[in-house]
Each structure stands twice: as structure tokens, then as C-alpha cells.
Length: 404
Ligand SMILES: C[S@@+](CC[C@H](N)C(=O)[O-])C[C@H]1O[C@@H](n2cnc3c(N)ncnc32)[C@H](O)[C@@H]1O
Image 1: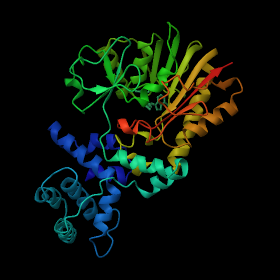
Image 2: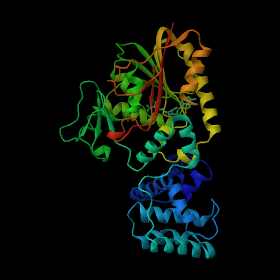
Image 3: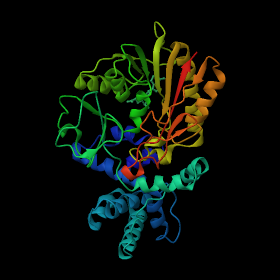
Image 4: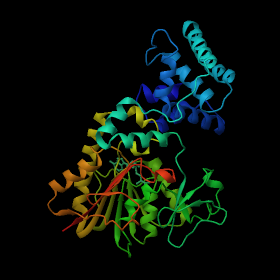
């Protein structure tokens, strides 16, 4: 309950809330189950609340403890396969008196009615309205359909690498492999040898747009945990990877050590740091609302409001402005965000070009990504409908600029 409270009332990311809220749980299995319950509750929140509201005479306030407890019991019983008596037994001890009797009664009513969750989850109305305004009703529908199925597990291979013979799946782009079933990554063949790393196919596109490095210098700004750093290093760039988060950089260093790839790693704030000399290529995978990864991190569906979009777009604009001064003439700058908000990607890219006459869009060619990735006005835009028949991909915006 504290996990949900941290996300829904305090506006914290689920990952951040996990670290504190599950401190009392010693077994990794218990922590994983608490995470699974919270994530599935956030994916199904609109429909869970509809069920609860359909079984209460007077609407429970959004922050009522009984509502939180009912969401958790219902999601276990209706989505996670927990027997009903066990599901309600886990939450009743969290309540006293009236709320406890109420939760027990509402849960019993819904079980007697044989209540079911919708097969296709309903997005929170504010998100559905925002995405419909930006992209249309079809994209909202596609986003809801994807919410019903687990996000895929994708691997990126260093050049020359290929999936082990016991890996079942398929490839959407060169060097990419989507596993047919989600599984523990550390148990996969080749994990120790480090010929691959986990990376959604969409997240692999920004670094692809920089091409082969041929020993040239690249900066990977906002680099951790390092999927794109590894791609750049594997493509023969001499990479400096910068990030302000020490803990995320520790994962980046582990990833480099496991894959045997090389990059200089710098812990710094890109709003203060600057390189000693101009470079050939820059990748700015900027901090953003992350609404493009709503399936993996469903907390974004409930935390991200208009204000966060505006504030993060301003941060991206400032970071791009700094990065623009670090590139050699003729060099390439790629800007990406895993966001489904045009106020971040599209608007920021337009504003950058308007403010930097020494830069021009370097349009992504139709054939450059195998003709499989949507390109709008020379920029890459992945929406929930992209690769839908293959299980979807993270939502991303990517633009490539060249300095005159
Ligand atoms: C979208 S994630 C980067 C993902 C990474 N590029 C990858 O492919 O694995 C954004 C990153 O920006 C970092 N960040 C946020 N603000 C920053 C700043 N002012 N300076 C440096 N890094 C920052 C965060 O720590 C986070 O790791």
C-alpha cells in the first residue's frame, strides 16, 4: 500500500518508491511480488476504480485507505491469479473498523457478482485525452491494447554477434533480437560473455543514426545505464559517457565490464560540465517524462502532468543549447526522448533549430532503418502502434542535426 501511496499521492516514480517501501521485505521474491502487484494496479487503475465505484453506495475518496486496499486485493484476485480469500486476507490487516468492514463487504460483493477486469485496460482519462489530442483515437486504442500484454525483452548485439542457438525469437532490425518469452536475463546463454545487452528496439535507434565511428570522438550525454554508450563503443566511436547519477553510472560501468566495451565514464551534471575540445558526434538521450515506456513503468500514467512536460522540455532545450557548442563543424547531434508528448520531442527539436542557425535537420532517410520505422518530417517518431503486431516498442522521438 505504501508503494501505491508513494506513486499516487506523493508523485514518486515506482522504482524510487520500491527502494524505501520494500525495505522491510527480506526475500527478493517478496519484493518482486510487491513490485508486480503495484505495477499491475497502476496499469489497471482506471478499471479497478470503476469496479469499486460500481459496488459502493457513496463514492470512496481517491485517497481513502479502503480504496487502496481494495485495488490491491482486486488486482491480485482478478489479474494475478491469487485465490480471492488469500487476496483479501493480505489487505484486511492494513485496515481498522469501518474501512475494514467496507473493504471486506465491497470485495465480497464483487466476487459474488463474478466481476472481471476489462480484457483491454482503460488508460486514465487525462492521458487518453492528451494522447488523443496529440495522435488521434487509434493511437490511444493501440496504447491500451499494448497495456494488456507484457513489454517484450529485446537484446542488442555487438557487430558480428548473433543470438545463441537456444534463443527463440525474431529480429526487427540488424543487431536486434526479440525473445519469444520473457525470462531471467542472467540465465540467458552468453550473458557472461557479454556479446549482447538488453535494450528495447526503439531505444537502439538513436545511436544507429550516428553510424560508424571509425575512431571518431563521441559524447553520450545522460548516458546511464548505458545501452547507447555500448552501441557507440561497439560502432567504434571513442566515447565519453556522462551522467549525473552515480548509482546509474555504476550500472553503466558494470555493463561495460560485462561486454568488454570501452568508454570513458564521467559523473557530472551536463549543465555544468564541458568537454576539453569539440567532438565529432553527440548523443543527447535527455531526461524526459518517460511516457513512452508506460508499459514498463506504468507510474508515468498517473504522475506525469502538463507541468512536468513543460519543465522537462525546458531542461532538454537548455541541455541541447549547451551540447550545440561542443560539436565540430560538420559534426552530428542526435536528440532523443522516450516520450509520447510532442511538447517534449517535436516542439523541442523545432525550437532548437529556430534558435541555432548554425544547425540544420539531417533528415533520416526512409530506407535508413530498413523502411520499418515511422519517419515524420525527417524525424523518427515511434508511437504505440509501431511494431504492434510484433508486440510493440517503446515510444520515442529522435531527431538528428548537423552543424554547418
Ligand atoms: C533517459 S535516461 C538515459 C538512458 C541512457 N541514455 C541509456 O541508453 O541507457 C536519462 C539520464 O539522464 C541523467 N541526467 C538527468 N539530468 C542530468 C544532468 N543534469 N546531467 C547529467 N545527467 C543527467 C539521468 O541520471 C538519467 O540516467
